[in-house]
Length: 632
Image (cartoon, rainbow, N blue to C red; front, side, top):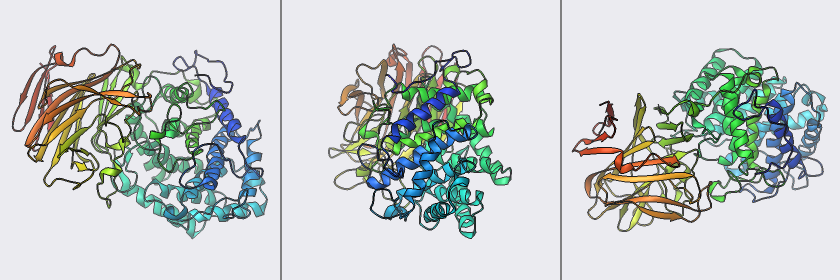
């Protein structure tokens, strides 16, 4: 698709994979800003972008437009050491003045007040972008504001310190506000308390291996990179802090990038998984931040391959409207991808990717020759035990798959309600080439227990372990099936699931315990479109009735207007074992799945599978759950 603003000529000498250079990043930042600023209020305090309003209302949405584009402008100008050829900072200076004169008033320019997250919380989110933008540009913007404007901006920002954030990454918003205020000599006990509280919570949310839960519970997704690592590591970098806290956060980012680097496909796409996916190329922010700060295991050439590949992917797959605005969606607009808190300017959290511009023109991030992304080097399987995830990448088609056995979006105090089924967490697998089907369609990559004609969903995920060997890996979990209508759960019913990844194959093993007489199971594979160059295959090995049927998902996915997917069916009752083989691949695919396995030996404790062509034996056991693989 055409990009509605001009980009520099590709340069394949330093960038053989993407053709993008630092000049492309600056041009994209400028192009996005020009398009967004056409929708500013007269006093430039609000950017009222067109589109579906969020649940927070149009005034909050207008502030969001100001704050999130300010972040892009700030990275752009700070990375150029204050050079601002388009005068972006003058616009934001005027908006800061207009928006803070009478905050809370219903007029043309006034910003909404920052209140508790459950009252009027969205402005707290935007306060972090305003504060970070001011911190990045302090030598050229903040220091030139009138003292009265500075005082008003400070008073508005302090609303974030005096009100209650949502119980997750939101605590980093007052942390960021406090960091800015302290950086300009306006710190006090209030700012210190906000920072101390955030750091205290972060320690409780850290689960190891570079992964934070997004609040209490087990929500692991892209917020790790674009929030939970970004704010503390960037704060320390801007402060020149090399103390114990800064070193700890830097090492955690380094550990995170060890696995996260494998979460981008060869086409540049990040995994379509978790919430807030309309932020798109913000997924590369952690990679750029690692390169800027030095807290990365990746070479500069690999880092640029990933960040530029992601940026280019979305620009070339319809992320921009004809007017140059980022749409609410993934490629183009896509309603099923969105959360109710998303408004017209929400996609501009993509601005976080421009943290890469803090690396100056002579930095190795821009001067080193691009190198292959991890998915382009070899087939890889990587177990991430802390979040309970399993990554599976195949070099031939450049696809990365994530098998989810540890992440959900259910807080510890919440009940498991089928009506709150979230396709972006509840499915057992996600990829860089497919999206989940809509909640009202047949669910992809899902085991459903059917009791009295009602199908179940998976809500809270309980990890049972993850591990890997040479060329293979596994992850396991259990869940209580939750039903819509009638009793939400069946007493004693649980499902234990194990995924073993090897090459392009996914061995999926489920043990259903406590199923009532007459219960049935369905199990689905990957959802693909009829015109996509992809193969989605599913083959039953044990516990299923015959071959899979093909079912339709008329609402499609973020990748295709409508989709189809394979589905197996089988009987359950008491304790039963169900084994199948799945695959998602680029055409022509790995060959018939029925020929990939030569023998299946089920038993009371699990199952043993013998792979064709000397591929060895895989043993999946329960009580306790474990997986072994031996070569022939």
